[in-house]
Length: 73
Image (cartoon, rainbow, N blue to C red; front, side, top):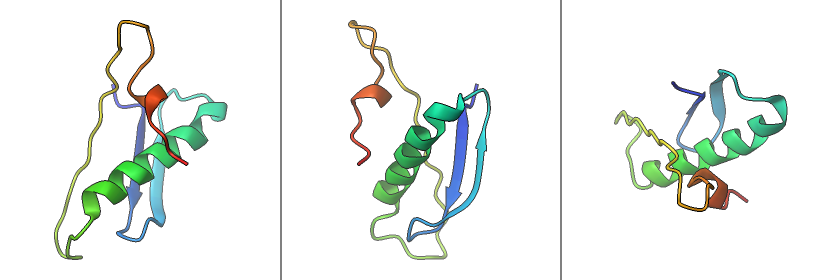
């Protein structure tokens, strides 16, 4: 299941965002994470190229996810 989708341009401006089942208090964290992930994948890309970034959080033995350990500040 896809929880969040953010479409942003190469400078990080959010064009469209959709959240499916994500509580309001977690949306800012998801938005920041997805914009950062997209920016990392867009480094050095020309405007005419199309990229899709996807990320599935993995649970670690201590019960936290990769997303919990990601610094989005």
